[in-house]
Every structure is written in structure tokens, then in C-alpha cells.
Amino acid sequence: MVFSSLTFLLFFLPLCLGAYFAVPQRFRHMRNLVLLLFSLVFYAWGEPVYIILMVFSTLVDYGHGRLIGRFRSRPRLARLLLVSSVAINLGLLGVFKYAGLITTTLRDLTGLPLEPLELALPIGISFYTFQTMSYTIDVFRDRVPVQRNLLAFATYVSLFPQLIAGPIVRYRTVADQLEGRRETVPQITAGLQRLILGLGKKVLLANTIGQLWQTVRDTPLADLSVLGAWLGILAFAFQIYFDFSGYSDMAIGLGRLFGFGFEENFNQPYRADSISDFWRRWHISLGSWFRDYVYIPLGGSRGSAARTWFNLLVVWFLTGLWHGASWNFVAWGLYFGLWIGLEKAGLGRWLNRLWRPLRHAYTLLVVLAGWVIFALDSLADIGHYLRLLTGLSGQSLADAQALYDLSAYGVLLALQVAICARWPQRLAAGLDRRWEGWLRPAWLALVLLLSTGWLVEMSFNPFLYFRF
Image 1: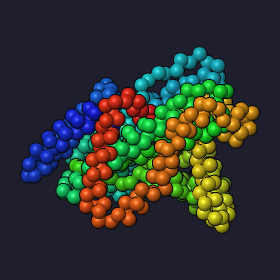
Image 2 (image 1 turned 135 degrees about the vertical axis):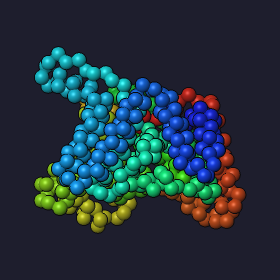
Image 3 (image 1 turned 90 degrees about the vertical axis):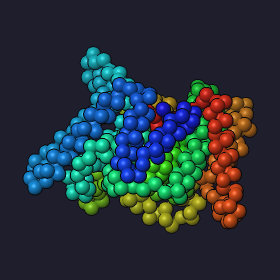
Image 4 (image 1 turned 60 degrees about the vertical axis):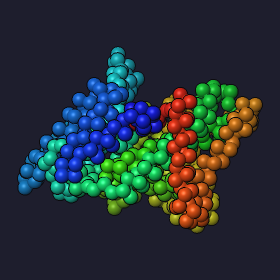
């Protein structure tokens, strides 16, 4: 089940909210049980078999957390328990997400007659695995108290607003909220607004511009023009941003409905003026996870230049691999690791002397080239597409299909540029009291109406981060 579906919006969410708030205040602890049961139904809707895997992961990390807390006075045993927890989590992730890549790579390198393991990817496993690992690591570091309430911990792991696509909510962010949160009218109102705007970003912006990317993606590369290639990668850049940030907005809004405060996951990334700045703004929860649990423990930037480069490349290799079991994702991660390393090595100081629009243009070009690596599976296709963008492929600058796509999607592309530049938000701020008085509710009602109508009429409703 996804948030941007009529089943979720018209049936699941109203039923969940009704059951949740039907629990009297004096039995507040039972509200976690309501959330847990509905979260299990939400997860089992798509693939009920893999609910066993999530329950297993929950029990493993709950038990390891209890044991680490109990034997904290014996550092070696506590460390061994932490290693056990991390090994089990990474083992599950490795088997279900990377077994096919590993066997295929070994077969190609060695010539052994290995059959690739074709296992269905459990939805959200990359997200909830990182969440449960953050809990046991932080318990070992004595940064969070041991959670002795299994119901509260199971609610944390399975919480449906952030279960299948993040943001990656660390235990310490919601530790106090699991048993001591309070739902208020302003918080619920803000949550509904965030939910509706996120739905609009996903349905009206991401899905619509995604149709342009789909058209370009289905066109043989030999038949694409330079203009068609640029339109395609711009469409993909907007689709993946509005798809994922819209889903994160919906998750944050849903969390507020139930009294949870999740951290932000995006901060206007396409306004960044360096690649380092871009990654401080894009998928913030993932970047901060790798920083705190991999990069800093490896030594961060405190050692020699060679050691810093090594730490960076390890983190970005893992970041790429986290996104998918394919070598183009690894290449994508290392590509950004290289640019960030160059900026740390001196390119960043040189960029800071440039006019900001030039820094912004540099960032967008590097990011768009990165999206080519991300979007295409074949390294040969990636090279061909990049040559197309530079005009070095020898293909036409424009063709009838590209001109038609430009006329059909040009206004939408311009609108998405404006939204990323925050022009509508500045306009709303200028309206002052009128916006806060009646224009905001009218605008939210219009977005909800259009989004619902789109879902009723259209069948194109992909969710890009399902595969991660």
C-alpha cells in the first residue's frame, strides 16, 4: 500500500485515525497497540510473507538492546553483542537485497555456473534495517536508554508513516514520543496540511512529469535528439525529487497526526551551490546516518588526505550500494564521492570565489549527470546518454518528438523550476493575512481535490523508492 492511493486515503487512514483516537486518554499506551496493528496491516498489504522478516528484525534488535544494556559494564561482551546485532541486520539485507548481485558478479568474474538468487525485495528493508541498527549502536554508545517495552519498540520499527520510504527515523529522535507524546489540534492541523501538500507534490508534479521521462526512457537512444535527452533527464530530476520529497512530506505529516515529530528529509536541494551543499539538503536522514555511523567512526576528515579520501569513498560506495543491487548505483555513489572529495581538496575554496549563479549552474550540471548514472542500468547506455547531453553523439539537436514534448510539458517544467526556486512560497508570504485567513485553506482544498481526481482518472502512479 502507498500513501498516494485511494485505498490508503479513503479507507485505511480514516479507519486508523478513528481507532487511534477512540482509545481514551487514560489508556494512552494502547494507542501504540492500535498503531502497531494498523502498521502490520499496512505492510502486509503488499507482501504478507515478509512481515515475518520485519517481526524477526524487531525481536532481534529489541533483545540485543536489552542484553547490551544489561552487560554494559562488561565492554567486550557488550561489543560482541553489538557486532552480533549488526551482523544479523546486514546479513538479512545482504541475502534479500544483494544475493543476486553477488552471485551474478561472481559468475561473471570466475565463470562458475552460479544461478543468481531471484528473491523478491522486502519493501522498506533498507529503511527499517538502518533504523534498528541505529538503536542498538546508540544503546551501546549509551546515547539512548534501553527500551524495555516491546510494544513501544515494535511500534517504532513498524510505524507505517515512515516504514517503507523513510525518512530514516533514529530511535533517539522518537524515544520520548513513543510513550509520552501528546496530540494537539495545531499539530494535527499542521500534519494534515503537510500531508495534502506532499500528496500534491507526488501526484500532480512527480507523476505528471514522470510521464515525460517514461516517454524518453522508452525511446531507443539512437533515436533521441539532444533536446529530447535534456528534456528527459530534467524530467527525471524533477520526478525523483517531487516523488521522494513528496512522500517524505506525507510521512512527516502523518507522523504529526499521531503525535510524532520526524526530522526533515529535504531542504530545497536544487538551490544548492556545491555538491557538498546538495548532499546536506538531499535525503538528509540517510546522509546523516552514514556520517554518524560510518564516516566519523572511520576517522572522518581528521586524518591524512589519503585517509580522508578512503573514508569518503567507503561511505559513498555504501551509499550507492544502499540504493540498489546494481553496479550503476555504486558508480553513482562513487561519482558523488569523487566530487565531494575534490571540493574538500580545494575545489570548494575556488568555487566560493565564483558568482553564486555560476556555482549553482555547476552544481546542477554535476547533479544532472549523476541522475543519468542513477536512472540507467547499463554503463554503455550511461555513456551514450552523457554524450547526447554534450552534443558529441552526432545525433540531431532536435526532432519532432522533442519539440512536441517541449510544447506539451514546457509549462509544467517551468512551474517545477519555480517551485524549486521557492517563488510560490515567496508569493504566499507576501499575501500575509489573506493567505493565512482563507487562501491557504482554499489552496489546500484545491490541491486535495485535484490530487484525488488525478488518482481516480490516471493509472500512472509509480513510486520510485519502492525498489530501495
